[in-house]
Image (cartoon, rainbow, N blue to C red; front, top):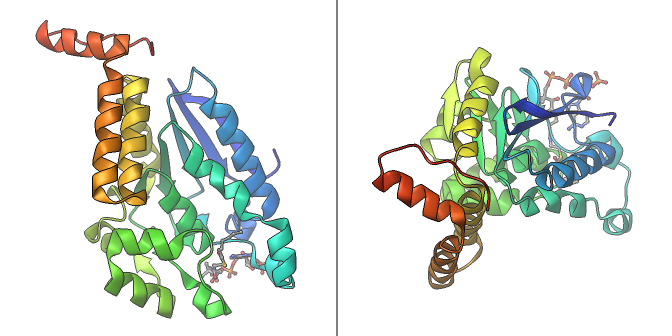
Length: 257
Ligand code: CO8
């Protein structure tokens, strides 16, 4: 891996992917995204990992897709290379993915963070979709995810002006989970990941799927999907253990079965 660093056990059962193109503010070139795709696939299939954190550095989560790499491409080049397809793996990952964001999360960087399941931000984190300023528009889900999180009026303003949004504003509108001091954002993400990693991985996977379904379907279908996944947890030993432990007033011991 040239542009990312992967630590399989950054904390017990918690893996870390760090975007590592600091001089370019972690601009997301094709190779970097292919490395992210491969790492996510590998970690998702690794039973020793239960939660995955993706981070950048203090200055930038990612300042967008690599403009230098895209600048001269034609529409047909873009279509044939179809670099968006590598991004699909973020969404397909079954385990929870937490973005630990500090500094710039712009354009594709903001879309990348929003595709993760939760965002823990440092107080310096800045979100935005500035593509309009370079003659294009968000292409990796920004118009959809920002609008779902912030509502039409706010998303329209941000996308049509390219204005950067501070973490406080992102929190107020529900885009992110939490803001912490800059020296703590990764630590906070690890604490959240560790808490989730203690739960039944089966229930976590099914709950994640069901929450995501609420964004992808009408309420009726989402509710039916959620209910089906809820019932399905009753086929697991972990559900039996979890409920039994509650009744017996002790801590559950989950096996992933
Ligand atoms: N692409 C390529 N290089 C970048 C990018 C980028 N997105 N952002 C920063 N860099 C590079 C700069 O060119 C510079 O390199 P060099 O020193 O070689 O010139 C280095 O990083 C440092 O950047 P700055 O000197 O500009 O740093 P500043 O602190 O002055 O400014 C900013 C920081 C405000 C973040 C500024 O760099 C900036 O505006 N960057 C571009 C932000 C942007 O427009 N992002 C959207 C890109 S388009 C996009 O993401 C489309 C997504 C569609 C989905 C993608 C599917 C593939």
